[in-house]
Length: 436
Image (tube, rainbow, N blue to C red; front, side, top):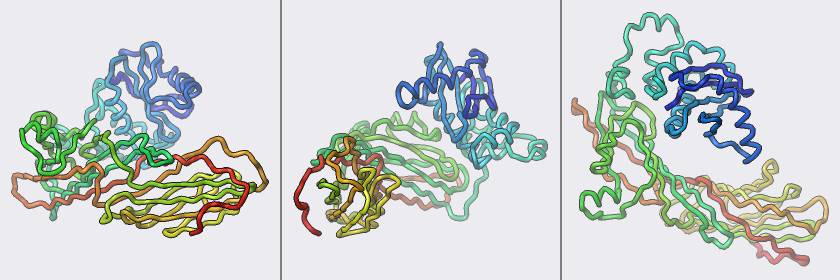
């Protein structure tokens, strides 16, 4: 695992360092910024994992500081990168603003956190609520604290004992983001679904939860047939509270949850998916002006509605004198990003909208921009998932026997959702675009 953890300023100078294993010289950090800059110059951007002379550098940049872990080869890079992200989250919870000044003002607490969160290079306690029970910003509290909280000595280190709520509730949100690249003629060039199960837990005591999904692998393991659609999830990752041996045995998601907000699970589906919103575009260029015709169509079922739709269409840098007309929503020019933005507050399934835009140029020219950026689309569709994932059951068991209310919501939203634009048509006569 990690041999040492450093906090560096933006010039690569160590502000804080913690050596956990002593198997790598601490002077190795002197090479980090040089390697980072070389990689950035060669490849345009540097990857989060760098190597030099047998030392692996894993880093996370936050504002004007770097969180860096060093290790030897054959280390678990994903675990260390997740630890650095947790470290950033904990620091932000303590100091609000994670920057060089806040680091310099809180040396003592940071060293305490580094000692509690990692032992001999292995991550230990990373839940902010647990750490805040016995590492505080008031030194006199540290002096009178005689023992660590129960959670630090308990098997369930992410949840403290003694929680009590008058109303016991669980909120479960299944959020799916769609990454998609679409050609000008509507063909899907690439697409995937990135999903997350997010929870808000307000439960007393030490409850055990069981979650069942319409998981294809679960039905196959149990030799049963699904009555509805079953999905096959890939790259599944769980919060540390999930009992992995139980999941591997019968695909049941069993866990004692942390208190409050957390991500229970993330997954990916690389299945063939149809575009939810498509934009057909025609671009005409004339001497001294350019015209756009955009037709947007919601290709999901009519009973669903996409909220806060934003269609961003790029234009040449020197375009001016914008004029717009649309059949639905509103349009505004955003010169700071060389685009115009078509906003539709509510876009019902199977509906269409038309937009026509006109731009002038400060001087007459015959050449066209060589770089054509794609149209990008933002949206969120409540009560809808593209994959068809469903919660079959959510059982809550606690020794006191109280009744709890589970709430389940589904939402689909955009990720990197882009539609390529066609080649502009060069015309010398009047526009061929229809009026709207």
